[in-house]
Image (cartoon, rainbow, N blue to C red; front, side, top):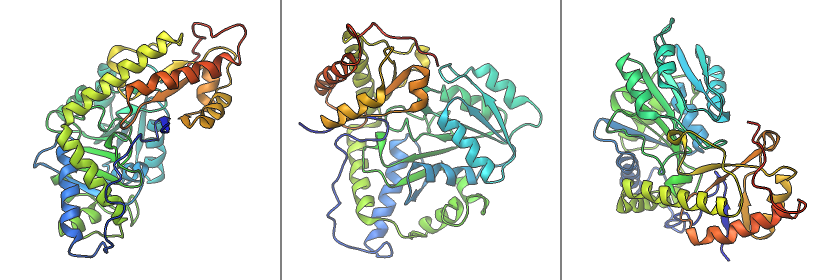
Length: 368
């Protein structure tokens, strides 16, 4: 049996083409067209046009978020509705930005009217930052509406799309964000280890140096890559593999990939319910196509469930915070065959039931 990753961090059947690519330096003339291809394909796969450019970085998605936030203009308003939006606040504070937060309960739909009032409040922010999909809860932000509000007030938007990339369109060619950060893993469906910042070309060209340090200075990296060179060493095999993954994404088409994630999410929700699990109720607009929060049956230690599933070559994500609040999350990233869900769900059900007497209840109580 192939490994099954039902975590927000594992990619099922990632594109590995290129890992055995011929050796070359990131300074080699042979690498110039590869770097250009990757940067252009990223923009197209995310729905961008000639107004957008991209910067490739040799970091995880967190590095791209940090690089992006380094270019934020103060004051910065951050919508906090979970762990990764709180990470945005921590990054911005560490960079010395003037930060204000708008708190939203973790499982609530972000209210656009409330965001509009926060944007209009004094001191008026110049940058609005948010997470598109909170992977600890599966809550999706109404990105188009929020970006439209910000644009109407002349506020730049910065979006952590690490968890939503591929599964949900950011709408760059419509009323999408001004800045976006994501990685080569997750819905990009390549091997993790690279990341990219996509933004309007005018903003990349005017990015002020210094906030994110030297390595992650997005403006300096942009200028170097526009000139056909990488400012720092990039892992060539990962870049070639990413280029092949982006080719697949383009061939599939972004719209078709989003529909695929919708289908697999629907199949997983249906399967969970058929096995007696209760899904954490979310507003329809807040439901992610990639991460599903599930009520943890009372009395189940999910750390033990995780350990037992690993023995079957299946991986799930354990969080002490989620356990304490009465839920767990499942994600289906990459080429997951919906037929594999049944095998996984049988194993999950068996592991949960083994801890309960007499049987798996029809859900517990999510205390989130």
